Amino acid sequence: MRNNSETFDRYNREVQRELRLVIEIGYDLPLYITSHNDIPGLPLNAILGTLKKCSATSQKLIPEQGLAQIGAISFEVVDIGGQLSYVLRDELEQGNGIKGRTVRLYQGFAGLDWNDFRLEQTQIAEESISYAEGIYRVRCRDIQREMRRDIFVPNTTRLAANFAKADTTLQVFDTSNFEANPHTAAYGDAPGQSVYYLKIKYQDGFEIVRATGKTSSSFTNCARGLFGTFARDHALPEDSDDESGVEVEEFIYLEGPGPQLAYALLTGKILGTNNVLPSNWHLGIDPAFVVLDEFQNIGADWYKPGDHSKGKILRFDGLEKTDGKKFIETEINLLLGAFMPVNAAGQLGFRRMAGVLAESGNVATIGPDDVKSLGELKYNLAGVRNVFSVQWSWFEQPGFDGKFLRSNNLIDADSVAIHGEAKQHSLKFRGLHNSRHTYTTIKNTFDALRDRFAGPPLSLRLGLLPSNNDLEVGDIVRVSLPQLRDHSIRGDRPYDFNFGRDSEGWIPRDGITTSSISNSVLSVTVKGENPWISRSFAPTF
Image 1 (cartoon, rainbow, N blue to C red):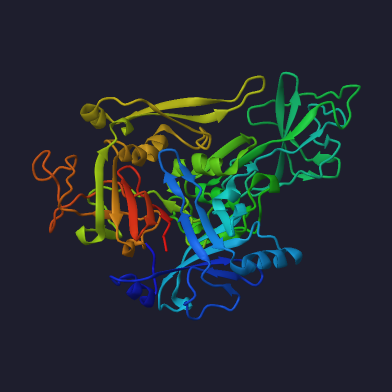
Image 2: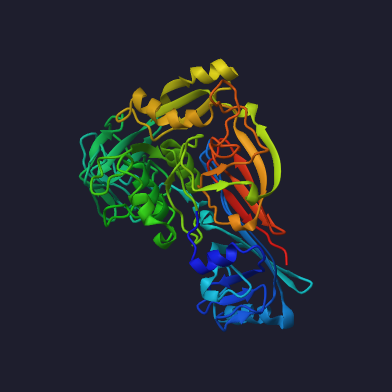
């Protein structure tokens, strides 16, 4: 939930108020575009009263898949007297295009000083800009767009000389693109060392080699036959050169606490060290766009600063080219039970998915005085999940395609008895490795996931007063309305309606997910399985 200044809160709680919006475009000298021309204290470099339409939608989180939809800001500016055209052209002539610029949306009210306006969202001008009939239309995306790039793109070279079974120096044509991976104490292989892993391919398989050094044309001090492979002779074909012959490919191996890995894949920086991952393994997001504290202090059961061998350690062998956003969300966040909200400053955070039951803590209560319209309380019978299949312990063997060696079924017998057996929900995790994890680990990991879907997920659409705009992604709320009853929550007697102690109302088991503002109404969708809120902002003037 947002923390506002006292002045902003006072205006925000007023029954009658007039909305004011400001868009800031992050040139060297920031440009401000306003909805009205009566905002006191605004910087001089401003185009006043030309912002006529604006909508901002935050990310939407989908916990059962570990995914987050990318948020967006769209706004329209009337180009009165060519003011915006002039600024855009002037900046372009100075070598400053709008692409990639930070765009911030601020909210305030008539009479409120600029210094008390609240930052609503921060995004990047990456989508589009268009012009028609005197109006510019700009579309932006949040920092998650920077995650939609490939990682783990392996470097390759070719064998330059025979490599006998007992050899420890591997001769290749070029090593310039290969970077060592600095291991922490969490690694099962070569802990505390900076090493290279190489896959030497042959016709019916491969050998994995670890090297501790390199020259411009060789890898040195090689350990042979690792990760289930065997040392063997590699003969150089007669017609081989730097474009044909025996391929030597980078073998990508990661191991460490989940939050540490997630932060490293985003920024390249390895928490608790001065080291960085190889540049082709991570997304290269500026650390200024990531909330370091939320990764470092997520909890010692997941990551213990100062002791890399503790926490929820994941291990990945033989990683290949993949979408960075998808990998972090489905292989790390979903497994841990985490999500990455984008805050108002446009920064990626890292938080736990909270279990949201009737007795759970909450940040706010939505009561009759907050609600302007009420939709249906829906029970998604098809959304029940009570049979899980978890595949884990990935293994790739020379001559065979990689596969999961282990599969465990987790069945919620109580849910099956009440709701019947649902369609099996399959989950696959390469980060769970038989060298570190057991069936007990699997069971404990997925207890929380099972709890969220034991009963039919609920959804409810509410139209709220805009004074509820403090709600953020990840907030858990209690909805207490006398006209709304949830028969699925038991009271003193079986199947009685369960109301709050002092007032009747629905107490959601699993939080809120989507919202939008239009015509002075904040529309919110509350979902039983999703303890999150995705907010959109589309006022009219």
